[in-house]
Length: 232
Image (cartoon, rainbow, N blue to C red; front, side, top):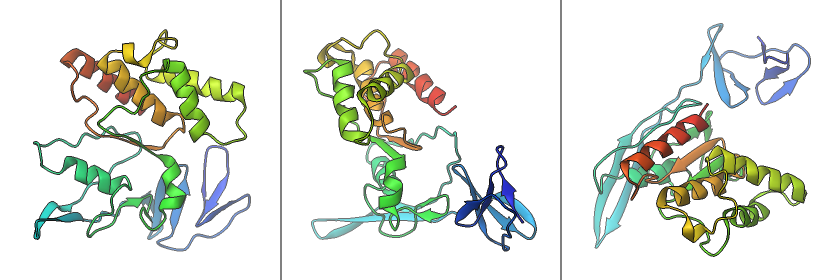
């Protein structure tokens, strides 16, 4: 069996090739960022769920913060983790984004164990913490240009770097604010600037810890709309 993409490139387990090849039963077939599996002569999306748990100790006592959490996130989805204060939202997100290994269970990205192959997968993951990751004493463009120098490959030219900076400014809808000092941006605009920093490296997976914290309802709604548009 063989699978081809829209450009007629042929994919088989572990590699791509130009000529017909054979896939064994139960093999994984990766096309883009979507993994399929071949089961009994039929191709279906790979979907293996693993329970994630996280235990911590405080003053000699053990606490189970995440208790056998199982979820599956598909490409193009915007997923919200909702719960009360201290429910373990950040703990769960840190476990599935590669920041903090769970006590038990597995985190799989297209069938690959995240923590076993983290060095290979970390470049496709973006993470925006609750605190803004921006420099108040720089303009928006200068701050993003500085971040781009740190995050983009060394062989990227100045023109390419500036083009990417302008691209992410447009994605987070901050056009016209390029020359504005970060400290003069509103709370919602600072959050968008923090998101732009992580978008510079064009991550496939994007995690945000309480992105709407401290924002008024109107600004929160606009930010959620921006995030949803990013999934398209």
